[in-house]
Length: 166
Image 1 (cartoon, rainbow, N blue to C red):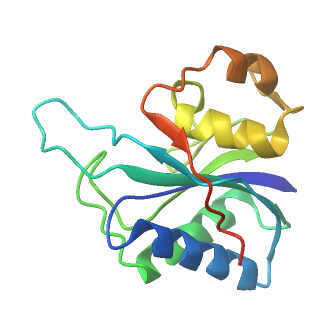
Image 2: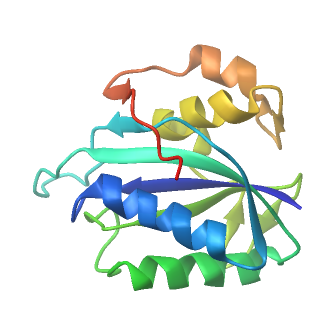
């Protein structure tokens, strides 16, 4: 199964957090890393009346796996935990966030998992790196990624000239 994962970090040296996440993914025996987007810097999304956060570093990776979506989610949560992720509150600052964006052409809606990711179309820090590595795909219920990328703003987002390649 071809899968796309969004990566983000805004705590504890985000570049190192993302590199370590790539390393964990690359070394997992049931995951095959196929592609990595460039690194992007984005403004943190915060809830109203909450403290300002550091900017995020984001990327998207393309994987191949035989794991079910639920099994993959557990693997990603384990990687987050290894890197100090604490689930305190929604949109809180974090050492590492790994989101399953797409799991093949599947649409999944369970208590634990919504695929395609429920906010994919509203997040420029997902759309632009995803387009970079998978420009020709069609997103379930959203249409061509290329059309979405064309209409998605770059506000608060900057593509960096730094690679996460190991």
